[in-house]
Length: 322
Image 1 (tube, rainbow, N blue to C red):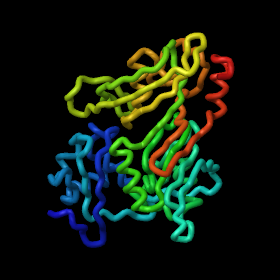
Image 2: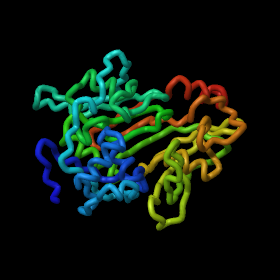
Image 3: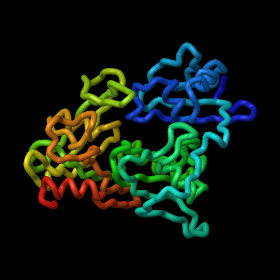
């Protein structure tokens, strides 16, 4: 079977990102297509799924994917019910936007300020309360952009309890251009993190990371060359110190799942308030991981987010208001 669309459907194609390396094909496609695993099994049974040109059948539902592989699904029909539900009552904080002056000011991209506790996009059609639900209520033209379905317009993600800048694309050419920037590590990302212990000056780490648990997700340092491991590069600079804590500015060059949190925890300096990688005796009193995506820049885009109130309050408690 070729990758030509079946009657009444289309071809959906995905490149497996670093953070999805090692994920099962059924879990991966369920999330990308916005359907249940039963729906994925039906696609496998109908000879609709290819990974790097190789046909997969139902018996391959547990196959783990490698980062960089291309997954194609032919004849897929995405019903409207699999699109994110518009929720105009949800608040939305816009940091920056790009428009095309040659086409009547049509929106091309938009950078939003995500609060801690809010997911970037829904995982199920019935799920609400996400950043994308709020965004499509104001900009319905995002529906179907990029990977479409429940990830319409999504260029990258932050962990649910990480706050800060999130970027979306409003048309397919812009989505492809900016996704390529993420894929080739041309996006400049700056985070602020309050971590346990004392770190002096500047530093960096190049570690092989892998996902060792999926629900809830957990990442650990692994031996290089093992299946599902990816090289993660992170740099940092100490900004201020308090009793048992350091405020860091962090620049991840790559974009692996939990990269900053797992890297700093491996080095003995977990992010304060982190429920997965944190240490006991946290002096910050934080109710969530104190990691904030403060800036994102690529090409003409440069969006910044100020410290949210809970982050600023924690700094005031342990650093004297730094």
